[in-house]
Amino acid sequence: MRINVAELLQRPVGSTTSYPLEETIEVADGGPSRLAGALQLMRIGRGILMRAGIDTSYKVVCSRCLETFDYPVRLNIEEEFFQKADVNTGGPLPVPSDNGAFLIDENQELDTDEAVRQHIVMSMPMHPICREDCPGLCPRCGQNLKEGLCACDQREEDPRWKRLREWASRNDKD
Ligand SMILES: [Zn+2]
Ligand SMILES: [Zn+2]
Image (cartoon, rainbow, N blue to C red):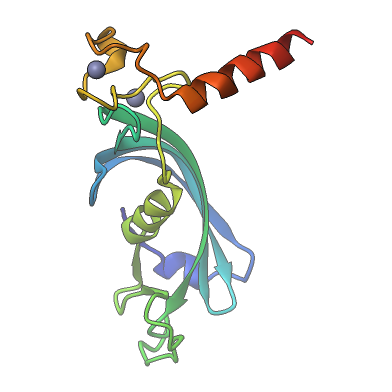
């Protein structure tokens, strides 16, 4: 979402405005993400502080069964946007040398999407699972065990694992 902050920049430090947030943004790998929440912009010394609480979800692949599913997340975002140009004179202002800093452009507009996108990517789980008890794929034939057991002989188990399992179940009983 692009927001013109010229008016807010002319108000004293600490002034705020709030916006509802309802939109869909494209995120690499995750597909389109529907955003629902609210954001608040606050005038701070060098620009604007954005705070947002956003509910969204995106597509991830289960690391066990390899099925794609919707992964819901709650994002709590706090990011600074720096002014490139003085709001009254239009004259250039020094911006952080850090290339990743979020900027308010010469028209005094800021774009929330890139900040939200970065937080979505940071929230992506390393090993997502579609549900806690997902049984995954059969290591031998690749059958998705969520859809039912395969014909592979489960008794042909490595004997060392079998002994460990027996030992564990004995301990459970104690
Ligand atoms: Zn799964
Ligand atoms: Zn199998």
